[in-house]
Image 1 (tube, rainbow, N blue to C red):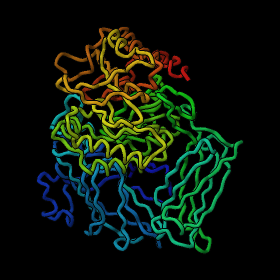
Image 2 (image 1 turned 45 degrees about the vertical axis):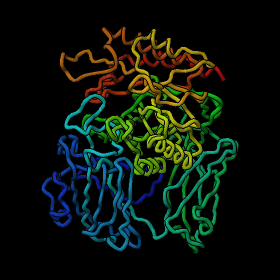
Image 3 (image 1 turned 120 degrees about the vertical axis):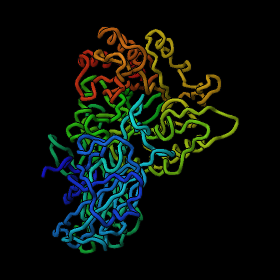
Image 4 (image 1 turned 60 degrees about the vertical axis):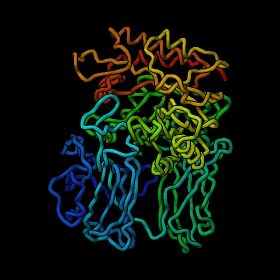
Amino acid sequence: MIIPRPEYPRPQFYRSEWLNLNGEWQFEIDYGDSGLERGLVEHPLTEHIMVPFCPESKLSGVAHTDLMPAVWYRREIEIPAAWKNNNVLLHFQAVDYDTTVWVNEQEVGRHRGGFTPFTCDMREIAQPGEIITIVVRARDPRYGPMPRGKQTRDYSNSGCLYTRTTGIWQTVWLEPVPDVHFLRPRITPDVANHRFRLELPLNDNRAGYTIRATLADGRGKTERGEIARVEIPAGHDRTPQLDLNIPSRRVRLWHPGEAHLYVITLSLLDENGSIIDQATSYAGLRSVTLDGNHILINGKPVFQRLVLDQGYYPDGILTAPSDEALENDIKLSLAAGFNGARLHQKVFEERFLYHADRHGYIVWGEFPDWGSQDFGPAQDHQRLPATYIAQWLEAIQRDYSHPSIVGWCPLNETGQVLTDRLTDLDDGTRALFLATKALDLSRPVLDTSGYSHRIPEADVYDSHDYEQNPEKFQKTHAWAVEWHPFENRMGPDGIRAMSIPYRKQPYFVSEFGGIWWNPNAKPGEDSWGYGNRPKNMDEFYARFEALCHTLLDNPGMFGYCYTQLTDVFQEQNGIYTFDRSPKFDLERLCRIQTRTAAYEADV
């Protein structure tokens, strides 16, 4: 049987032994969420599904797009006998939304959140050589505050809301580990001192054990050779830390468009010096720093020509049909002249970030909060529950070590007006901001993308502007550095402000463009973009150039984000169609964007 999505799902923390559980599983829709009472943990299910594709998708073989309050999965699998003397971990890369897992009718794990991985330890429940039965229930409620990104709560798509994803939508896999083993490492590049700082947590930090970290130069075509090795005793610190120094002659920076990666091999040695656990990672040596209203990468201004990427696919919904499709989206963006993306309202698959790391493609990590209630946690009665913070920190923890990520954005388009008292949105925004800074001091943090800026000490300030008239757009954004930039300050009533004032942080327009282009759309067809559709292709190019050049010519802008890379269902304002066919002359779009930005010439 051909296994869909067969590639290793966690390339920055790789172990050689693992078993992919993608493929055909038993499946059943639980319309009444009564499966537990009806005994579905113990009994076979009525249908089948192709994991890791969600049941709404064509690739799953189910293609059921109606509301599903709960779904069940079941599969028997034999744990390889060669894994004897190991504990076996059951990994889920992403399940939407509230998940319970049983193995041999015993509960082994629960997780809330549709975008981040979790692991079930089957110690003392399942052993190598045994046949086990895995049962999964995923609940996906229609209402209530939950991070759902752009997933619609209604039966059908509308506006900026798209087909839901329910249940398993990323790889499921088994992994053998010794009794004492590595947990996910954190790698922080230190460009000034030519080194990587490693935090290497263990599940059980025993005295007498030793950690060995080896740094090798190169990946792929670059010559590979060991350049650094260090060992530390593992039993003295809860999370052992060490520095891997790079000799000056071997220093190569990871830079946009120049993706040099170092290989890091981690070995855990017992009291006898025998290797009991080993994993491979990689890292890029790059810095992201602030200098006044500039964001510098490796000490240099790099204008961030970002594109809004929502990561949807016609046949897989949130799941890319193949690993090649993930990488191809990056290539499509680069071909149009962008050097990065705002990963919008979705925590992308780890393998997407792996390809971004390999291509020198910069990205902003974002939390999929926008669809929590109506259009995000915006109105006076809306709240930011604790689960938002928990799930966002899981995403940062997963992705911390990727050099391609140059900034974080926990919220999107919060639209609550300022009042004479603090609100739950104020508290929630501050909590998310502080939690992000506590977990990562190496990257700038934008408190919210557009609208309700509430954190005076936020590293970045931004606005959204979908004005389609180039003259009006230029009047709004063609200000000199010392002038006041455009702010989305007024709330829905047009009278009261919803954002605190700009405080001279680095500034960019993080959503603009969205030019509607579908010349084949018929009257009444569900097709839309921002503003009036250009009358012809020449008018599109003229509008695209005028909008982009207004921002490129402003020395006060460190970047922009154009909406968007591809059409997504009815939202048809992409550079490419939903099936990734080009709409425009990509070389012409590239020429328009790749002129020297005033920002880059300003420092």
